Length: 502
Image: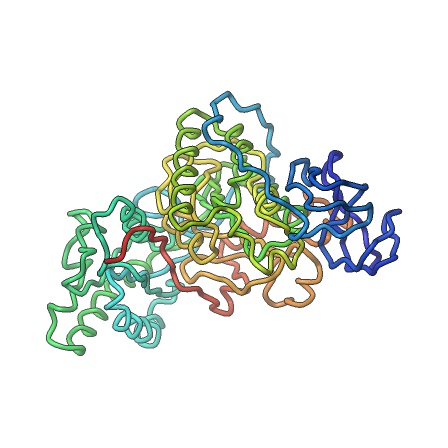
């Protein structure tokens, strides 16, 4: 296929190239001055040292040396600009946005006893209070799958909510609230049907009362292993409790529910320069359809929105949302500073190989997965939303930390956009994979659920692909299995823990 130059905004001084090209090739009337890899930036004009390099209509950075039209612009070409100030942000009524109305306004989900978000799956979750018990719980899960699950065909599976928290930690440190509420709220995930099963050891700092209410903290829901005389009695008690829970879950049935019962998470990982042109905009379009239909959509990843925080501020529906946005982003700035790093530590070698020069470029491509809807609420990592609509969940950008944080906040299906490719998945909720370029789908036919690369080639529009993704989200929420779920590609739950370990 012939290479093209993709320019996003009329102000842009660079464009990305759709196919790897050689020195001397003429692409859209520009002669390339060097070999340029797929997705990397080409200078659209002669520029001098210190000049602004603009993509998405924003300044990505300042040139470290003179360049000529047709030159390759990469991570070694730019000096980062200052990040936007939080202090300068102030609330003003967001501009009215008219969103497209979706053609589908229902899905087939599992209603829950508490009347909150509905489940997209019917899963028995066994939560641990401390890593020490995870070996026993892992063996329990194996036995449940082999001995009990066949009797309960309406239960989709059983998962262990294992984690690295619980003991040897400063349990009362201010930041300990983050891992504790994340574990606590994960128990309430809509896919778990309101059934509570917690396994503790008996001497850990994360005691059961920190995770459960007085009404929930009962012998019917909690087993402490140190109360049992050996492995055999432990396992017998655990299997008995599990079967009680399975009997209740087996009574759940899918029913037609309005979209207001659905909570979807949006995340991207292994991003490349196409992500902000294809996969993420199509996800943003799908997000707008979901929100317009009444659903709740979460987008996250603080460092991957930090350089566009002023753009998010303009979309905050009220002053409360803006204040929370400033507080969460400010906290994260301080968190990074304590580690002697800043947002420039974010882009990975794979991101750079895929054409992303720095975190500003990555952020501009990341934000578009949130669409255009107003932000009704901002929540911290692992917090539960109290409003419905578009939510900014202020989590770390790391895939394996963001995912569990969104789970804790109530998402029951996740959409994951990728340019470089990743087999990431969750046992607790289905994950839909969207590729940013055709080549990735061709290579990973049986791992990518939807390819947005056709947008880059001009074969399809963001709207067409976005609507197809919207329909796929509802199909998966209604029971269709994406590839990661079919293969059981499940990542470990890495709950965010910025608190001290003693």
